[in-house]
Image 1 (cartoon, one colour):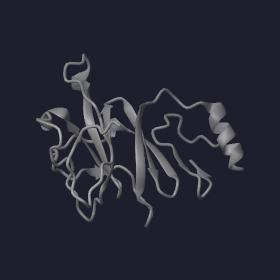
Image 2 (spheres, rainbow, N blue to C red):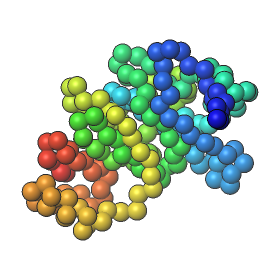
Image 3 (cartoon, helix red, strand yellow):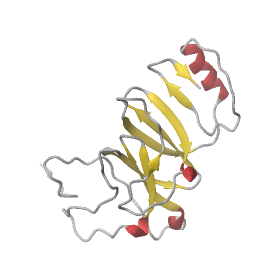
Image 4 (tube, one colour):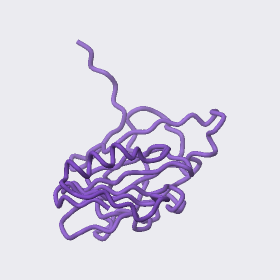
Length: 171
């Protein structure tokens, strides 16, 4: 039976929330940064250069985000570039899409800025970074039909698309 190797030593009350890879020798390496988001809607980007290279397996890691009662715990991490978008998802099903370019770059120990305003008791459960190439109007129309709502487009730039499945609202 295979047992693997230890990647990181964590305290009993800690847990791993994500993992990213980075190739400093890649042609587009300088265009990427690390994005972390907290459960209370705070996020920030940090340059990879602010993190040291892993010295050995089983280390205890280094601080990536200042955790406070206001920010809450981290809920995810991603490698992003300036032209990426992210989708933030609350535990109640509210989803918002926003551009990475609007999230500032801060040091490892900084707390970040609000990337999603949350309703009381609706922490962010996860997020996903991706390249946005435009919305498929057929899919948007089918979604509105499924929710029993009229598809209304207020802003053709689609800088922010929000969907709440639980409340059956689409904006």
